[in-house]
Image (tube, rainbow, N blue to C red; front, side, top):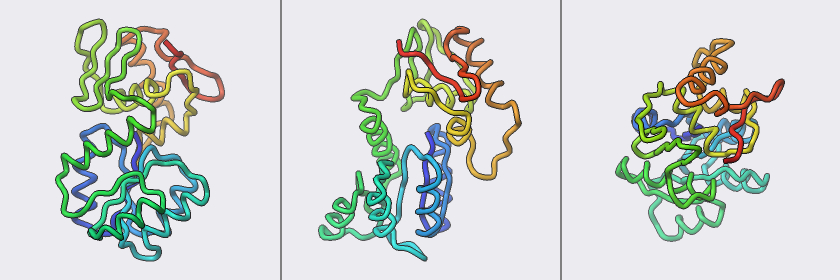
Length: 219
């Protein structure tokens, strides 16, 4: 799952990014509103965590532009503006959830999980597919009752594919989900991860669509 974090407080931004990375998220971090709007308009994210008090463009304006362009990315507003009027403005502008600073990191993680479940229309967090069970909360992956150990990128790739069975995922989309900005990507890295997942589960798990990308067939 790829998240855009938009927060101009250096310490808070570093803290959030550090806390979310072990949860299986690829976190890209920006610190001003204009850059955030450009990134959200040009690239695909599964979620956005958006501060309101941002330089160059206020977070509320970012949100309004985003929704005016019919961009459906779920947005969690993260702000110190705690009045009822401010919360109403944020929600009316298109925020999907609203979390007041200071906050507990565990609550932030829970709210992000809830937004992801809603965005994929899934009442339960666990993904089940042909004997595979993937729990995004514990990061535990089982196959036919046995625990399977996955590297972080393998886990991210499996989660991305199982979350949307039957949908062809392009190479670019998958690489964006696995690698944050500035991370080195080997030319055959995606193929290597796919190969490892097929070996750990079964060869037919992931189907290659030549010239496009990969998909997991509907169960």
